[in-house]
Amino acid sequence: MESAQTMPVNAHAGVDSLADFCASHRRLFVLTGAGISTASGIPDYRDHDGQWKHPQPVDYRDFVRSAAARRRYWARSLVGWRRFVRARPNAAHRALSELEQAGHVACLVTQNVDDLHRRAGHRRVIDLHGRLAGVVCLGCGSRFTRAAVQMQLVLRNPRFQPADVAHAPDGDAHLGEADYSDFTVPDCAGCGGMLKPDVVFFGENVPGERVASAGAALEAADAMLVIGSSLMVFSGYRFARRAVEQGKRIAAINLGRTRADEHLCLKVSAPCVDVLVELQAALGAGSASR
Image 1: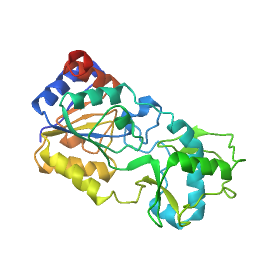
Image 2: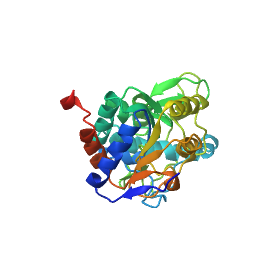
Image 3: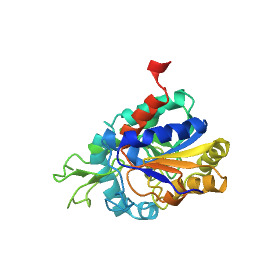
């Protein structure tokens, strides 16, 4: 595949080429990552070189094996959820939704757990890593809303008021030297089992049916567009590899390095909001054009 044409950090400079790419490939398989939600106030994980900005999130094995790890996770989540739940779709989400409605997006697969794509109006979304608004019991499989679990966390830990708070990605929070030893984590109301956010943790496998659905969508697509993802996590990178195997072209909008840079035919290094708003206008997508 040809080397990527990398556009500078200037949305306008790359929009014409990206619009040509979209016009030439009418059925796009779109994969989004944390970079599309930063304008909504949700921090991302990695820097421009694809390295961690924050300590790596909780590992699935640690969560299920260690009560201390679960107390730490839920204590930080109790604080981080308050800001996370207030996030709203930004102009990038809305522009991408308009592009879907105009027929440019055949399927949207997101690595994000914030549900902002649906709230922006997207109809065909595969939440690869789940949604943070849900909680599942690992014992009986019962499901609960995160709002209900948040209420239980607050009621059981009324004196948990950490002073040093820095917000982290996906509803997490850095709590400095907070003491989690007395933090109480609620159990399943039905069976007393262990509660876990209904999202895919690091070290946990993405459910096979999601991978299969996304793979089928990629097979039916004309090309792949990566938005706001470094693709450093294999769950997303696997689709870039499949696109290459299928001879499909891949373009990307991302500030910084991606794991698939060598396979890109076009890369626009600019904020997702700037690029997608201009791309929507360039393609004549939106209520003003209908």
